Image (tube, one colour):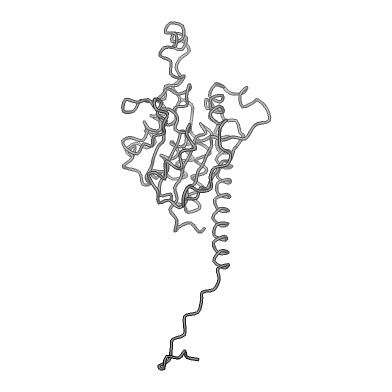
Length: 314
């Protein structure tokens, strides 16, 4: 592939539990194609997979971690009695979400261990989160990684907001359209940005995505956040070209019931999709460059040097 001379950035966006499975497949495909991103930006579920890639955890480790995932590892639901008490006695004054989010932060920390620090990544890494007060996107690149992933995955109404430096932050994929430009603000020299977006889904044939879900509010909120999803992103920003991956997989994934077989299915489909489209993109791009060179007019011959008497030589 004609890509090794280019500076390539990678953005992994959203998707909840399906995003964890899918982005893992995309990362595996990128590595198998020999692509080494110069920088990674993770948003929402993409921040978890991005953190694993950024510290150098290999494909086999990431696949095994994904397959072994259980709800108890990353979900700390508030008990029903506590919810009733909060709504009846406190009139929901202190209610900020059904899931605390501390276990998710712990899940990332236990995976990274002593590498839970932006300064210890092998690839520069950023995590996006949305400032709940100013509505602005913020990219984190200092301190511990796990608490920033916790903030970035705080789906409104589901996960409680995360306070960092005295300010509350929520899901980092809400302003997903701004992510490529935000990455270029900190890394303006990129030739390409590969954008893996699992926030977008194709419409489904029936209502199983909602009726078969353990806690359908998660799906309602996630789909509501995707309604204004852009179906056509810009092909470039300035000189930087965007390679946009949106598999739109329709397999229903229940965040409260991780399924190893389903996880592997999403992983494989995402891997095939990413590998095919990235290979095709660079192959087409290379052929286009060769064609343009062939269409250029031949260079003009150098001028004939004059003879000693000043006349052109024959």
